[in-house]
Amino acid sequence: MKATTTQRISAAARQLLDQEGAEGVTMRRVATAIGMTPMALYRHYPNRDGLLNAVADAGFVELATTLADLRLTGRIDRQLLKILDVFLNYAFDNPRLFELMFLTKREGARQYPEDFRMRRSPTANVSADVIARAMETGYFRKDHVGEIVFETGALMQGLIMLYLGGRMAMSSSEFRAFCHRSFGRYFNGIRT
Image (cartoon, rainbow, N blue to C red):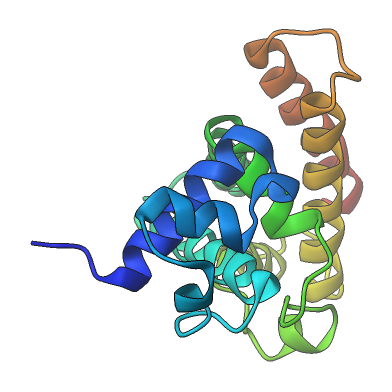
C-alpha cells in the first residue's frame, strides 16, 4: 500500500527528529527529503509546530498501543514495573521522540490536572487503573490517584532524561535496575 503524502511527510520528519532532534526538523528539510516544495508542505501542516505535534501524537499512539497490549497480572508493584519497562524501552529506542513527547513545550500537550482527571491520557490511564485497583484492594493507602500517576510519571521522565543526557554513568540494564529500585522505594512509601 502506497503511503499518503501526509504519511511521507510525517515519516521524513520523524527520521530527521531521530537523527538530529527537534531542532533538525524544518519544513524546508522535510520537503526536500520527500521531493516537494516547502510551500506544498503547508497544505498538510500549518507550520513546523503543527508537524512536530503530529509526530509527537503519533508517538503517543505507538506507546499507548504497546501499553494496551500488556498483560498485567501478578502483584501490583510487578504490574507497575511492567508499565515502567514499556516506557523505558520506548525511551531507549526513541530518545529524541520521547523528549519531544514528554519534555518539549508544545501546543495541545496534555496537562495536569484536568487532562488526567478527564482520562485524556491513554498512556497515563494504564497506570491510573492499576493504582486505583491497588487502593481499592488495600495494597496502597487511599490517596489521590491522579497525583500519584503524575508523580511517578515525573520520577520516570526525570530519571530517563538524566540518563539520556549522560548524567548517569551506568549501562542501560544498570539504569533499568536503578529505576526499579527507585519506584520500589516510592511504592513502599504508599503501601498500607
